[in-house]
Length: 538
Image (cartoon, rainbow, N blue to C red):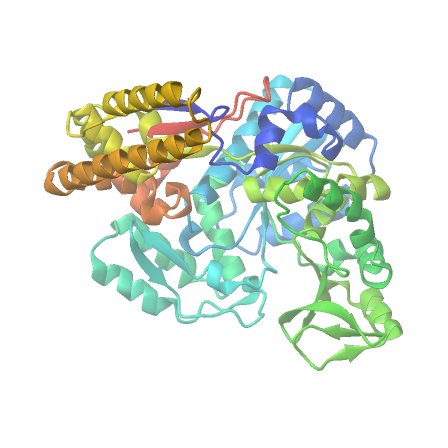
């Protein structure tokens, strides 16, 4: 694949203001993170994490045990796991939900970037090893976010709903119905049909199926998959669970940062609760809340005394589950992790946590925005060229603005700028005449000028609207172009699935598609401000 790129420094509608400042003006918010994402930042982070103690043997034993539960774990992955016994081995991590058939494309982009960065850092710092980690969000309980995927604009959905069950433990029963729908649709390649069958019809839980799927796609690149639900891992995190539940310490430590974000009009992605810990009861995940001096599971009539919950935390740490704000702390407690790759929302909530990390002396990693990639099929590229527009035209305008721009470039729109200029000259002459006669009339003249200009703009808009409606050739092309990049008016990588993407890019196989994508998931760590939006062309 070849590619074009668009700098986001001038137009950050694809990033929220906090992440835009982190990428392009990091000095403004330097107190919210630890080190810049550049060579010096990585060197400093490596040194800091080298001085931190991790139970590497326990981590490796757990990872090996989990890897061996699935038949297709690669030798490259096993080698990377064993490297973690060595003190000069560090991890690069990304996390994601257990989306059906990988869900949206950015799932692929995040893991690709994590692997790519691990390889790149191993070349830059040959005295160290860097291995990629995919952190499975297996305790997430929002099934409605992961129970479907799109083939272009057609939704394929698994008939399950959110009932509080941690998604990793959901049985794959019922996916044979979706499998038959996929076959009957005649949309999918034989390779995808076979992969879906091997993934979901031959593994009993969604966690096991997802592990098989990620191994199949990325195993030859050494991806390590971590399911954080084990008692042995959570035992290391019980002091923070304790402080969160019984002292509300996480909430208190976050308040200075929350105040700063609010004062500076930044969006707060995840606001800390008084308690940020969930409890898993009868395989349902409930937020712990304090009510009438007792601890309650939200949405139930189940109460615990403090002593009861303290005993459960000591005896059954696996029943306690971090929310979105505690998860980064959990990750950095158990992994020798130097960098986290996430989307805009993830980077936003990581940036609220530095003070909490400092309080617990937990190493804070370098944060990296995941790649933002768009695919440009050949048929869409031909339409763009035919209409004589640029990629910047598409990405800097909504569909209505794009339509008018295209009509204008093709001489199919009218503008009355000259006429408006002449009207302004006439009214300015009126003002010049009356200012020495009756100055109070100037406001009346200005009001009439505004009304006249508005009338001209209304006429201009109506004429252009009529031209737009009459042009039956260009409008469908405009829709095709825009909907390619923004299906359902949402960024392409949040809707399209790998099954559709690899077909429209005319890739010979899923592996070929992944290998091509992988080459463009590089993150420039030599300059923090070089982040770009990429458009990939088959």
